[in-house]
Amino acid sequence: MKAHTQYLTLHTRSRHEIVNITDRVEQAARKSGVKEGLCLVNSMHITSSVFINDNESGLHQDFLEWVEKLAPYGVDRYRHNLTGEDNGDAHLKRTIMGREVVVAVTGGRLDFGPWERIFYGEFDGMRDKRVLIKIIGE
Ligand code: ZN
Image 1: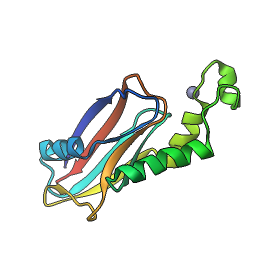
Image 2 (image 1 turned 90 degrees about the vertical axis):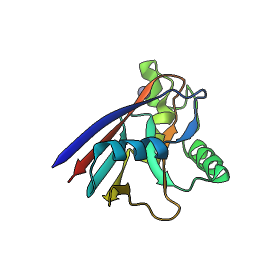
Image 3 (image 1 turned 120 degrees about the vertical axis):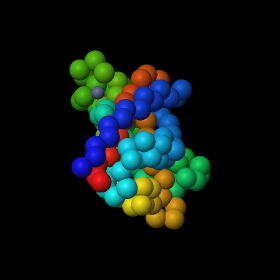
Image 4 (image 1 turned 60 degrees about the horizontal axis):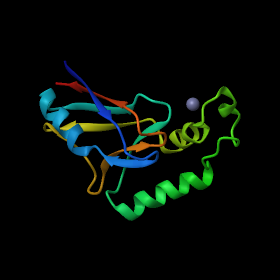
């Protein structure tokens, strides 16, 4: 069995942002040499997400507005912020949008549905964050 591990570093310019990381994951899949297997992609931080959906900017704005309604930013709004942090909202947003995705590798390529792409969802940005890519198979 082959195994390939790679880390991406993301540093968004704004606190909340959605970044298309599909090309970087495809590059990692090619580099792995795996023809048949599985590709795991996860955020290594508890205030950001990795998810699969459509590459459509209106939808991305919808996601950001939706999670903001469910868990609005606010220093005095969350018990977590009594620790001195201000990112209670980001922990909740991350949980809603998910930690990781797994994509099948078939014939050496990520086996997506027609509109599926991989996105990094940042909810407490403007600093370095890491994403893990792990590809295993034959
Ligand atoms: Zn926190």
